[in-house]
Length: 328
Image 1 (tube, one colour):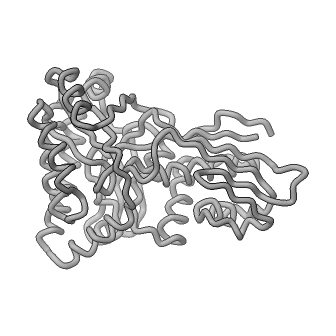
Image 2: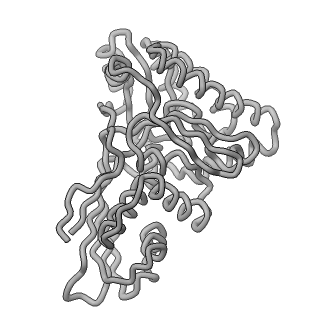
Image 3: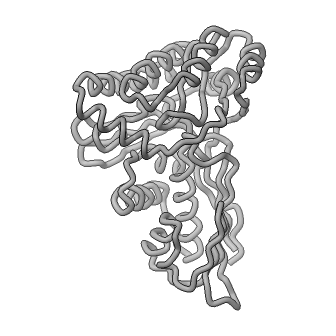
């Protein structure tokens, strides 16, 4: 039995510049972090059964792995050339379709577990590359490369994507004091709204292709991401909070599906109650809010919860995907 544990991510800066409509022309640049909310994958040989069983929100039992309906599981097994009959179980601490990169985290964790099952050691870089290959090249998902690298690497990282799609990464030079400030003053809330990220991203891509000013907004988001990195490395999380507000204003202008009246009302409430800035994470349209508020956080949290949001405390994860149990 193999059990992997993989963190989900929160976007810190530059979100969207990893998307395929942007980086081939301008290059991408992001700051991303993983948190202590995890997806667990269990893989074991299915002895005494002539089939593979995959359990997630559904349960599949198939005689041939190529008949698995879950596309990420099927393609991961195919990529690694695994035809063994296996028991695969997926358990998540966060809801799906909520903007935390859970689908990519699940795939990274699955690949980590499958490589371990095969007795293969694999680097975080290679895991992220394989996950990106499956999601973007094989499954043609309209997503970027942030999530795979974030979950594979762990920690708070600076990602640069060149015009050919190559990704380089390094931990940002952030002090322990600044990390503690972020853990104390970044507040995450679940809207209880889930959405299909693909639909939001497709609409964003279409909107930007039809309006050059929206592409300019994305260029500004890239520059803001660079400013956020500098602010955090200089120990100025308050500036980061204010830049979050600028980022969110620009992002909402790139597609009508990113925000709506409910989300806008919650966001405005957050600012009214002391937040310097915030955003809906991931593609937008629902999922989780992230706010920076260092002015009476307890009062801020209560106000948001009283207005229908669910508070989700977190700390940063520094490990990335890892094997928790290896009983081969």
